[in-house]
Image 1 (cartoon, rainbow, N blue to C red):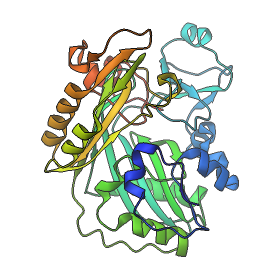
Image 2: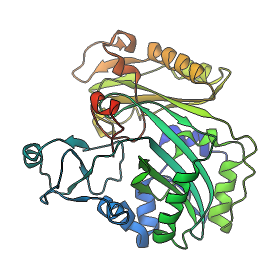
Image 3: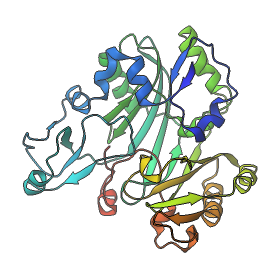
Image 4: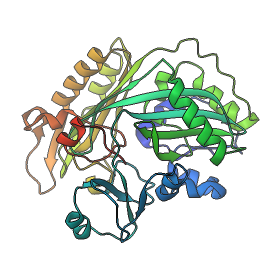
Length: 340
């Protein structure tokens, strides 16, 4: 069994970590849904609102004020699919969709927080903030070394009410200090930046129900993302990627799509098709490697046009992106981050 739900480009993090044959550690939400039937309700975002006394309701009920954020009530694929801002009652009526909901539009810092729980008690925290790009993308994520005491107190109280007795990793998405999503698994995009021995501690947590991780090398890190156009088949020379992986300061590089699958079968935000992620300790290094990857990628239009280098595509949006976010336009992101 072992690690279930791992994307092919992230096996590099898990391949060398032994796991008992009978143990299941969920890496995606679909696996967690199957593994924890008693806690499936946490994937219902209406319940996430209700447990915090936040305004929200299914499409068809009337918001008391605008703007609001609209999204699927349950979305196990992530990437902000179906999320958008609604600014008026007229816009709301025009966008009514079965299975979707509205909730308050929050502003403030957007954090992704991993928490190691032992019988419902937090034993380890790691906070990451995203710098948004256009149309549901992120430019990069900062994996912080410092704690956030006020947020941790709020989240610990919520965990105590909703996940008493739970042992394992969870990931909480917050905006302005309020929870917008709960995932019953880790955020694996940047797990190599958590430090040596972290994944071994995760296996011990699921196997033995204890958390032991020294966390001696806790440093700031960055997860820098590259996007290309939708509607193209993208290609890159694997050997060129391997050379970049050996670059000093680079922790890992992910080529974040399966070339054997049609582009339309990948879950992607509206702002672009995610091509690569560079995990590193220096933002300058991450951006430089992203630029080199951009020059190396070639595309073939789905309609069959010739190969084109990514550097010839128009717009800074081709360089931005990555990780689950909220689909607001750039002007909305300047006034506060958006929700999934």
